[in-house]
Image (cartoon, rainbow, N blue to C red; front, side, top):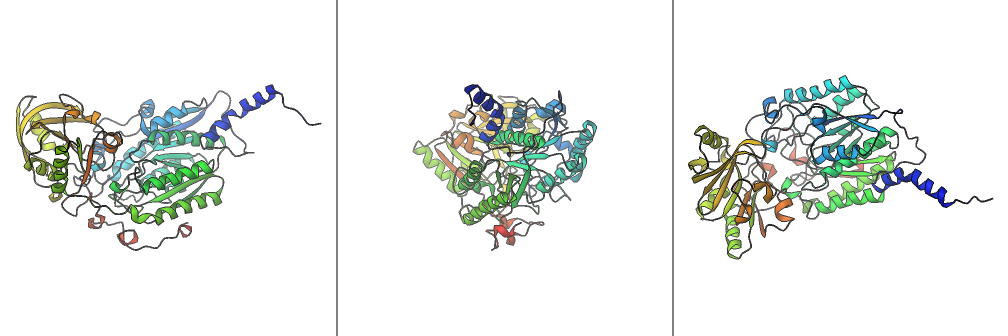
Length: 537
């Protein structure tokens, strides 16, 4: 006789399946028939959490940062302090805390290096020091059931070819072969096949600006929990199409990069349990794994993982010419565009010095000054010596300021520019202990910072007496992140990416760089490589 389900039985069945249904809705399906594990009664899965992130510009001047540069903002975070904050870690932690069976254990993690992505090679002792501190604490709290690493993907370390993969390898040595290791990354990472040889999952932002960093942290938490529970068997595939582009060309708000990321999302929507990540590469790290790559994870289905990786890599290769080139006006033409926009009422104007990684380039500043452009907010110019002079002389708001600024890292930065005006603000800002604002000319303000500062929203510039809405022109040291607050919000009426008047590092002209670990001829568009995704296994 055919059995009939009563409403109460159906309701009970739905409730029993609800956790799995929720996972399916998030794209993290459990495989039917898998024996799902749970911690012993009253216990939880113990997950170690560590953060070590740097986008390393190995061509940048200023010397290799040491431990003191990494502790500029304070000693490493420890314990629960590691779990605080937003972005990737915030997403991971918030998602993990929604599950009653996860316990998070923070490992000592450095805060960030002075100067950020404008700093050169990390010293080997820096890597050993901080990773060693993590592993020492990890060994003390063993056993753990899982590891989460918040990384960048473009860290470069002297004598270590693949820093993030080496970090995963060292963690693997401590936790053994069966404890899953999962990481989140910035899409500007340089990652080939090696990271996933030691780890079980990589979650990479799909948007630039990185609106989805929090979401990738959430996804990593759900994924790691499923792996620990035995509900997911990580099966991976990696492809490395030989494409190398400047990051200014990697904006995901325009095709074809937008289409590449949409193709990855489409595969995730079509195939429950599939995760597809794309690294666009960071060309200013002189490391062997530089360039683009596709990372795919599936639930025990190698054939599907290979098929997805082949498809996305093939698509990237097919559209490569549409995101490998870029030409932008120099300072003279860009300032002329700004002047025309002011006359037409198409303000505010953003002039983005995309090429200036140290932040002390003066070409655009000089052109604006010579053309007498008014109501300019220059945010910001790197000049530690000028800031030291302000503090040494104990200049206070209202005091006269008359100094040469900028242009001290080499020929590409241009000559220093004399600024005569009034100090209107000094204090802590942008994570630095010394920042100053100088009013000069006709309503112009120049912000001085001791290290590279990439301003991404008008709100970041609303401090002290500064009111961003009062300016007609913003000069920003940025490539794409400024679009978050100035473009995609509709704030700026006119936007002009500004090039440098020379073939220097930071520009789209990567052939001008003196690579030691990279053969540019092996990458499009600098050589003529042949690529077949199916052969990249």
